[in-house]
Length: 343
Length: 153
Image (cartoon, rainbow over the protein chains, first blue to last red):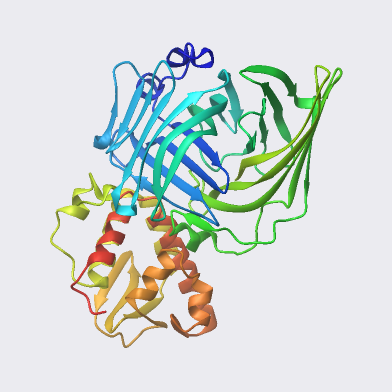
């Protein structure tokens, strides 16, 4: 068993069978994976959302979201019925139709089978860094907890856009989120991971900032730096400064679900040309600049307003990171995927 | 092979095949009234007294709100707004292959009427889209529209 995966199944298990059963209203949970291969990125998300229907008990609606970026983002959101959902008794395997996520003692196994969209693949993702958990962070009136693994190594294959892609130790990122909140409430977030182009490079970065819906106030923010499989530095709140500059001069590559493009409209990007993150603590200092190149819009109907939507911009680009941690200099260019949620 | 997005939505899977856009739209409105009643009422309010005649590839029908939404087959003598398009153009807009403004500019969607009425019809269309993306039955109906051999094309 590799050391970073030790205890994985004890910490990264499905919460829905306990938490959503006890109080389903507003419950949401998802497992999110991003795989970086030079010139290609893959995002897979297994998603559960509690939905209320008139005169019926709330039910968990499962979705499988897959988007991939070669020259542009493409993908799909596969929505399934509650009857297609199965969670194993050990809370380690989530099945949604023919799709399956298993959390085992050495890592994650992900099976995707969306034949109507010609999407399928089998991934094995082995943690190369220890997971980290953050509990009960406010999102509007609700709360969200998450676990993330800054770096994994991805093996297997994936078929998308009519092409097969082989993976043999490419770097990847994972987070698992669960909680009760409502899309459209007074919150936004910026959530990004930066991984070096070479798996031999020791550094991994995760950035998150929770804001109000208008992005005028940062409620909490952090930059996490991992070296090999261990945390090297954590910069929180006042130790972190974030600066957006300019606007990305291109329209989204795609909007999912596609009918949401009708209600969102617009070609102009609400994605910056760059996000600069600086962090200082004691003698440690990091500067990371992420330069978005393209993005996909994942849209959610607001749960608070009949005529509003929430947009998650899945943004890919390059990142340059420099600084010094524990007296060790770091300076590299890597791949970044940032999720920008605007209420 | 059943589209996985259809699974578990018996209304969309087991009902007799719809023939034509008007029949599918009628079923769509029925589902919205059942599944997202607040959004449905918002849509009715946005449409107001307007009568919209729609021609999709030669299939002619009209939409009006009389407490609830009605879809009437055939031409309308009282339409405030007339929309002419094709099934392909409808699907291109719903698939986000073409934006609605671009579809209008390219004459893929033709709209005639007084400006205020056209704006109201547009607002009602957006209210319909907001309602549809909140209702679980609608992806199945969209697939039915895609696969429906019954309507004129």
